[in-house]
Image (cartoon, rainbow, N blue to C red; front, side, top):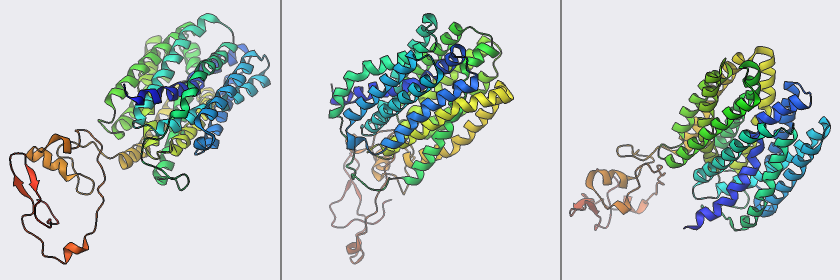
Length: 452
């Protein structure tokens, strides 16, 4: 077995601990509303305070994980998560619950920043992010199946997140060995791909806000609008997260065969449709269909967005910044969903969120097209970015080892000026077919500047 999986699994564990609070947001908001006497908007504000604290940690640590060391930063985040969520679970007053949730949220954001920086340093960031989403979806699905049967008021969701942070603690001992495997990057300097990174970060903020506006009130839709019990809603969420596991596994198998633009663009359109379906549901069938379809595609698109952000900078700065911007959107989501649902009702809220999701799909997909290129397939080689070897391979049957694999991302070609050749007489017919292999005969001293 290669060392790559051994280097990735601690990041997956820390990623799970950092993302778990966002995945459990519906049950946190719902239980705060029921057991502490808060309104839907007030409970949403508590969830937003938790996630804003998480985003603050991400912005603070962007580009600084290497300075503090991933092991120490991850352990600090896990300690804050255990203490904060533990206090929120034990507290009985709203101010103490809010304070504990914010401390825990800062710890979750710290753990997520460490995981994001480490994922960006992996040889295949999309594969590692898919494994992280697979792990957190499975953990949240198991909790949605068990929490409704255990009672515990508002305490149990917070205690579950604190326990997850405790269980992940041993994995931090392996973080010291995770080092960047990509091209060497300068310790300091400007961020690469600044325009694309800013567009991606802004798009992820709006995209996440629309998703979590619905996710934060999905429990209330099931209970209030559809008339389901908490146990039934929990079962629907568990089934939806289970479908999300299948979606993430499918994304991991698909990899980069279609590039990033197709999964992000098409997936976002499907998400917009499922948002409208879930928010306008009037029975168990339509509610479950919308939630399952939505949660199947949501982690798939998110895994490609995380991989896209990680590909912009090997040091992980764009991954942390885009992830933190996404956390801001996640934090604003519950408040937006609560306000829209109270003012306009759940169906109108769904239409608004669906429209916003469709609007943000265009710029994010454009970033994926601009930075990710197109899949390299026979006949798709472009003059400015294609590899002539690929065209030669599909026409003459060259040696397979020298040809890019089918579906590999297109690589940019650097033009090199050769002034010495201009002063000499070009040699005609520089490329001649030699032998059955179809390889070019380059025995002449100088090559022609153009190939047929």
